[in-house]
Length: 120
Picture 1 (spheres, rainbow, N blue to C red):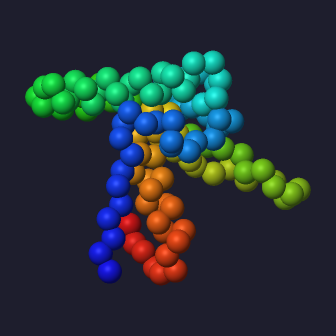
Picture 2: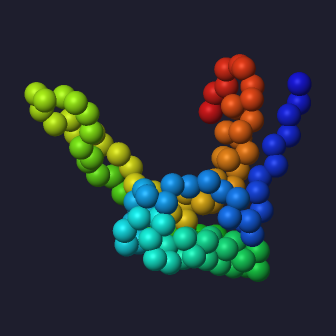
Picture 3: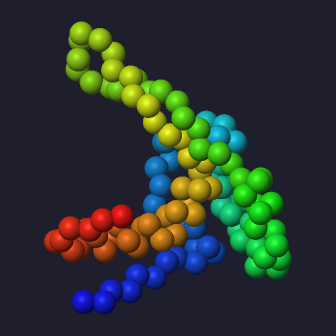
């Protein structure tokens, strides 16, 4: 069966699901839902997309100017009394979470409906 999944337009970030209480990532202060973080996170990818639409030669510079993912450790919250458990995690900037959500939200909804294996 052929299935077509439409991504969300970059003008519709309000449809993308995200958690307001989680960290906004590198380049932001506090959590995603704090202050103007959501407005800033929507503005960045729209600006880049419009620059690329106007000038395809901007692509290499867009990569140079991109925000890196940041690796850090996090304490695992649990009932273990013996010792704290630390784990390594990646922090991604909020605007990349929104960008990925433009196609990932639709894909995740499809996977939730299908009772089959899938690989990425």
